[in-house]
Length: 149
Image (tube, rainbow, N blue to C red; front, side):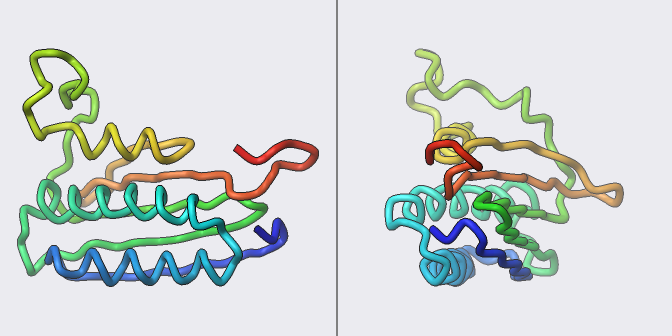
């Protein structure tokens, strides 16, 4: 990975599951051009797909009149992905732990669990007019003097 590479990308999609593939491919191609490893691209792609699916299904409730915004920022070897929906928002602390024995067979919470496993940092914010913003960070190049994670 070229530690001096910088890139910004913004995409806006309609709330349709078929748009997930388009966003994931665009981000993957951008990361490949910048020299990200295939392994990093794989895990980032899975986290991005989960964030997009959550935004479409849970955030916008598959309302095709609502949009999902995706922003990619890469600077100093750190990737920041933001996925924003126009839904009512939610409380991330109320999502059940998918590893708890009583939740093992429930589908709820797995997407957030995977995003946290695949990325270095995941935070949620809320837009003033409604909607959730998930911010995911991944270090792709060694920090100055450090090793790659």
